[in-house]
Amino acid sequence: MNGVPGIEAPLNRENWPIAAAMINFGSTDAAGTSVQEQTAEQWAGTLRQVSDAGFQHVDPTDSWLRVADLSADRRVEFADVLKDVGLGMVSLSTARRSVIDPESGDDNLAYSHRVIDVAAELGVSTVSFGLMRALTAAQAAAVWFWTAQGAVDPDDASVWRRAVERFRELGEHAESVGVSLALEMYEDTYLGSADSAVKLVQDIGHSSVGLNPDLGNLLRLHRPVERWQEMVAKTLPYASYWHVKSYYRSEDATTGHIATMPAPMESGVINYREAVSFAIAEGYRGAFCVEHYGGDGLGVSAANRDYLRRILPSEAVSR
Image (tube, rainbow, N blue to C red; front, side, top):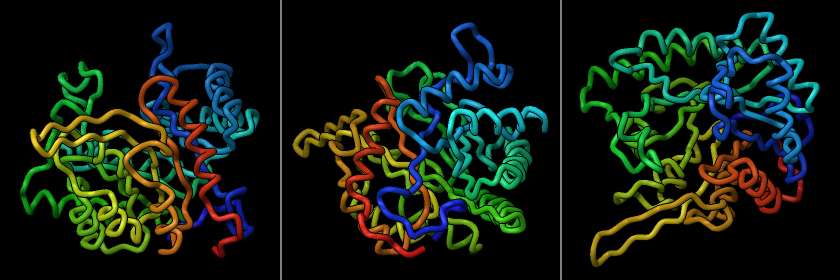
């Protein structure tokens, strides 16, 4: 299980790292300027919102800023901005950069190697990768993108082997620079069910490669899914980093109708009090990253952080 550098004391509810995701901030500003091209002052203006919401840690999330594609000088600028606003990084999460994408897989693999190197350079302990692909036009047009069908990983043993080989290659690179990998669960990919996600990690068979069991990505689907209790039991023993969020979920057994909406963690279908307790008992010592879609996503993420603080152990947990 992955620990968090920079926090040497035993973990408890007061010091357990809980990062804000940057999924609530787009890749361009209101003027249409790419975040990649913004000034340090503009980055600071956005990140100060995160620190003002009470966060001490952030996961930049490359749907907001591709830190790995910044020049060396700009990476120094970014690190200085984080320090100035009082934020640390515990992970770099990537989104929609599948290393087996039939069109951009090779480019995504090269990008993933850059992410690992930059994580090591910036002292970040964990990188989160996934197999989700770019949103389809229908997904981009939907109110909630997960209600429209996206790309599906093929039932093809050769493509599965490519995923295993490429993640193992990334795991070997990560281990050589002191970084661990967490593979994010996401529908219709080889990480799209508890059984498949665990099998993929087992087939990769590398100690630096674990799971990011983002259960919300699956529980929000308007289709039958495995019960969250079963997914927790199967996946949390392999977790090295954890995106946490929740959804309301209604299932009508008489009609088959299923509907979901984003919910605060305390209110949604997943009982995180139970899930977190189980994870810690299984040895989880990684960071959390709180997320929320819709409304004031940062504000709800801050409430999710406070909820996590209340349910994490008050007594020290050994590393």
